[in-house]
Amino acid sequence: MVKKTLRFIASALVALVFLWLALKDISYQDLRLTMSKITYYWLFPYLLISLLSHYLRAERWKQLIEQEGLHPGRMNLFSGVMLGYLVNYAVPRLGEVSRSVYVGNKEQISRTMLMGTVVLERALDALVMLILVVVSLFYLMSDYRLIVPLLGRDTVSWLQSLISVDGMLILITLAVASAIALYLLYRLAMCLGRLLPTIENMRTFMVDLSKKFVQGLFSIKDVNNWPLFILLTAAIWFCYVLMTYIPFTAFDLHNEFNLGLREALIITVVSALGVALPSPGGIGTYHWFVSRSMLLLFAVPHTVGVAYAIVTHLVMMIIILIATPILLVINNSVWYRKFVNS
Image (tube, rainbow, N blue to C red; front, side, top):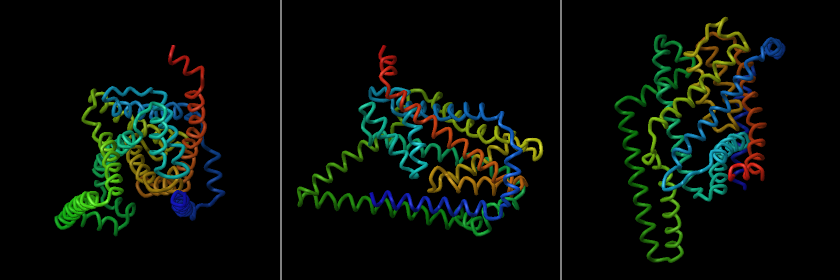
């Protein structure tokens, strides 16, 4: 309980700091004027694309779980994914645990195994994001000066040193040292287990837990339909790009600053980096990363960028806050269970 409280306080501080960074140079009269000019006809397609992206994520998750005779219901998975997003607004990363527990209880599946599939899913998204970062950098490298103000000279220098020969050797050395340390700890636990029955029981429990986790982590090798899995992954990220592009029309950014799908892709990648930071639901970090990238990369005024970030983040939050309880109520209702079983 204390650990969760400290985690919540830390994430709230991160959110406040980045919100302050995003808003500190803003004239609130200009912000209010900018917000008053936005149009709202884009909300309906944005809502549909948003819910579709979450459903596609649940469908892709199903592809990872469907092995060894497991066939979880789509509604359980969809509700679990939405619950995870909702919980993340309170405590970052706790949502991944929450959806594993929810679906595990509903489907009578090992929650540890499910957590392994969630970790795998996040790793796959990180890989896709890395690919998109490379694609975005090809665009940005046409003007190297854009990268320095966005990331900072020190960060650029650090990245250059990281990908150098010396940097790669250091990373490889650290990886090998970590593997050796883990192996030595395992051998130590084996030796102590022979001497103390309590430690042996604990070791057995941890080994069983690890096997279930690894089972979920390596479930990717048991995916039956690889073309569908890849298509779902591409569709999820395309939805994210559309969710960045569609609100451009609210602020007329597609006409005034010539922002199209290519620019939406770059802002999507930047916003994903912001959401990855330990802030509740990306609050603060999303606003700063998005507004800063729009200003430095595409010359969108800071006030307009902040207004764009506030509106898009708020709409997404409202969708999660409203849709998730509705889905949970429907999924747990008697009439829905009768409908499914009929």
